[in-house]
Image 1 (tube, rainbow, N blue to C red):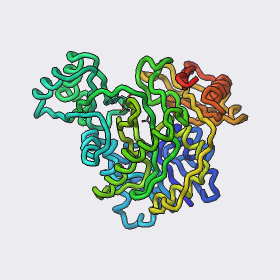
Image 2 (image 1 turned 180 degrees about the vertical axis):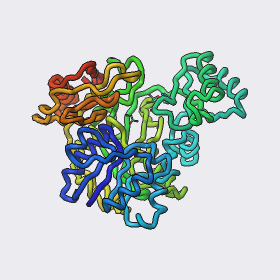
Image 3 (image 1 turned 90 degrees about the vertical axis):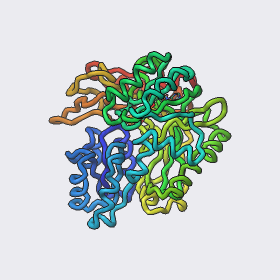
Image 4 (image 1 turned 90 degrees about the horizontal axis):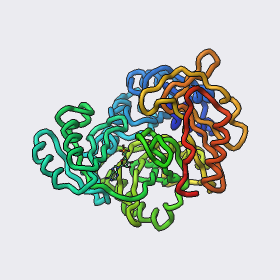
Length: 426
Ligand code: AMP
Ligand code: GLY
């Protein structure tokens, strides 16, 4: 198969790494990719949202299978765009239609979908400028803390948890009236705060059948002990000890089945990943959010644990044949630790030389690149999250320790990573 993978993060490097292991992978292109994907396939220089360029590449390179990594092109409708083109009739695509991607792209859409399909989630109300005054009185009477969510995509910053009513009113006004997140905050969801522990569950579906991939837990805050600003993710572990059989049975019955059933009943075209951001409240699972793609850095622990041939698996999903597939999982623990640029998640410099990176494939660890670029034989930093090292172990602690040992061999100015990934499970 000739494959085109869209994206440039650690997630895409992990996909590329796994795809390239398949005997069915004839040629792999990654757009735009990073220095890591460059060593596995052929990086192409167009943006994931340049639909024309994607189409032209599919035609020119006779692509059989397209995998869309990030949410932005999905939410903007890349799948509908490509499927409406007769020249691309044969193209297999992993990624939902624009409507399906709205599960991530619109909080109001996803909340309404959950209500219609009886899927447990926090209670909520939605507001626009038209009912702003009602929103203020609603907030004044709301229990604390209050969760505010911009309806649309806001680069991972659209969720604000307010500890008092004044703060909530200021934030609500900023979002709705001062367009804090532009169009994305034209609508705002005000949501009940749920207390519990979070876990991410991943499903690959063909719209009718599905397979469950290993679950994971990511570490979103920049500082150790889960302190400081939110990031894209500073590390991840899999499996998650509290996501036991009893809990996962509830997740399947109350969340996954009604979600896949809902997509079918509502005729929503979906072949691709669904990332269920869940929270365990007492012993019960609730949906915090849906994403229409895999997580980053979760993919960097989920994919290494998957024993199946990824090309065969994705082909089955794109051909509505997932009922014929069974998933095989490596039972060991996997952990990934993300190294970031100084200043991240705020401002940071790029173009900083990375050294020691060539030595780290020696053990059981794998070094996945995120924000890196190759210039004249030198690997440079090219983003906030720079790279992540995934290791296996017989415990979370063992896996994390191996990753940290590997990371000590790598260096660049301002390199930072959390030392405490998986700390709750020691
Ligand atoms: P997101 O930016 O959508 O990934 O959400 C960021 C984080 O906000 C989630 O991972 C949760 O930790 C938190 N969060 C979102 N909604 C709620 C809620 N209803 N109750 C508690 N925490 C929440
Ligand atoms: N790590 C969280 C995400 O990919 O959204």
